[in-house]
Image 1 (cartoon, helix red, strand yellow):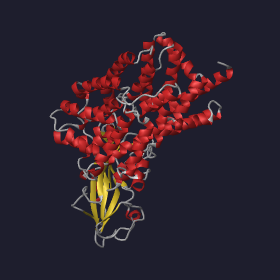
Image 2 (tube, helix red, strand yellow):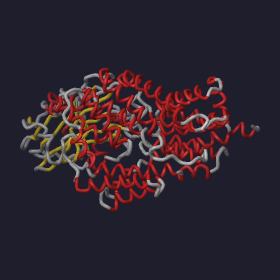
Image 3 (spheres, one colour):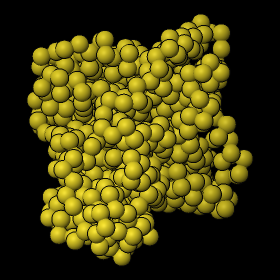
Image 4 (cartoon, one colour):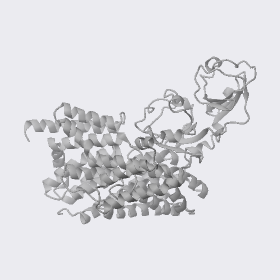
Amino acid sequence: MDIAQHMDAVITLVVTIGVLAGLIWNRWPAEWLMMAAAVLLILLGVISPSTFLSGFANPGIMTIGALFVVAAGVQETGALRWMLERLLGRPTSPSSALARLMPITSLLSAFLNNTPVVALFIGLVQGWCARMKISPSRLLMPMSYAAILGGTCTLIGTSTNLVVDGLLQSQAKQPGLGIFDITALGIPVLIAGTLWMVLVGWRFLPQRKGLVEQLGNGREYSVAMRVADKGPLHDKSIEEAGLRSLQYGYLAEIERSGKLLSMVGPDTILQSGDRLIFVGVADTAHEVRAFRGLESDAAGLDLDHHQRRMVEAVIAPSSPVVGVSIKEARFRTRYHSVVLAVSRDGERINSKVGDIVLRPGDTLLLEAAADFTRLHRYNREFLLVSTLDGNGMPNLTKAPIALAIMSLMIVTHLAGMVELVEAAVAAAILMVFTGCLPAAQARASIDGSVLVVIAAALALGQAMTDSGAAQIVADQLMQFGGGSPFLMLVLVYLTTTLFTEIITNNAAAVLMFPIAMAVSEQMGVSLMPYAIAIMFAASASFLTPLGYQTNLMVMGPGGYKVSDYMKVGLPMSLIVGVTSVVLIPVIWPFTG
């Protein structure tokens, strides 16, 4: 390695460490960190602009984008809901419930992006648990784990698989994998993980209430008052009436002549007969009843009003409202909704709602307009948006078409008629042309941040290979592995698992791939065992809610604490890890 290449390697390692630190700190969105790192490497001459742009042309990127649309089409038509309500049945215990729920979740996640699958299941499982008198906390985390395990059963089950497959083709110059090439390992791993959760794991989960159960029906935390006829508040603005600076709550909305005014500004003029709805802690009732000119409204807050929906939303790490209070975020103005309560670490925050500073993973209980779920379902500011009052059922007439399109995508690829990327793009187009998914929602369903992260990470991974940085890291790993291919496989798996718990799973896979390439080349063995280990380890995120998106999605609805993930996830990680590293060399020999 000459001096110039050595400098490039040092620069790449420093930039990579900086990216890892930034992702762990979680101060900036992952896509911006990755983009900044790629641009910095271009400016420093480590990679060329064409190398960076080539990441966006990776077949895996196009396939992932198309599969987002396919999954959204199946979800929007209600095909999954129709199937689930018939398959779940009425089991009598958490163990028997999981024996039904986990295989169904895994099967669907093997062919669809697991995020929309889990998003749909959360609402269904909450209602299912209510009918069975079982705590949702006993089922929601295992459901997330089942989605993760199901994604490892096929090449299209998770974006990580497609990313590694794309790297095998672009960097290692090897033929791509088929949809079921990893199934021989995925099924044993799935069976082992499912047996653990069904027989033992669920017993370590708490019987804890989610946010909806904590809040009850929302009435006890909201107060309705009426402006007295010809009273002192008639024709006064909200600011003049002193209703903008309440100590225990805030004015959420106004009902006037049968119409709902959710955009309540300080200059809004009050009129006799206006029905004012305040939201806050219990002391809000005492505070607002002390105002002259306000009369108690015995009807209370009608949560089944035809213009409103009860909605549950989980804040994404990249949301612009993270780190600011609900009042400062101007939540009502931004989203046309009212925050009724906030759950964090399994418990509802008992303080004035407007003063709560939001964090990633916070679950908000909202009262919103009827179209809130449709407008924000694909909003990247939320990990989950689900209606809780049973409204907004989809039209099932397109469900058979959506299922047929997805099946056609899989069959045509398996028959060797088209490449996977071609099948996925064609299926996405058909979803729109057949009316299964409106074009606007198709565009919204594509998670651009995920695609940018992967493309920028591919450039960073290429820099690690070209500069020799990957070789330097591989040399250090070789010292611990003692030159044993199996021990090196264990080290690659463990390192990838560590990365995926603290940074995004796709970034972990991309950063580890060039290191695995260097290891296999130095030992003169096949790359495939190490590539498969990266696939499975990058998806095996069970220890923290932040390691995998579906884990964060179920945290609020399940009422989980971070410690719950550790208690149940550590045995799951060990079971999946041991099963993987034992079977990988058997299925993909080092000498292959």
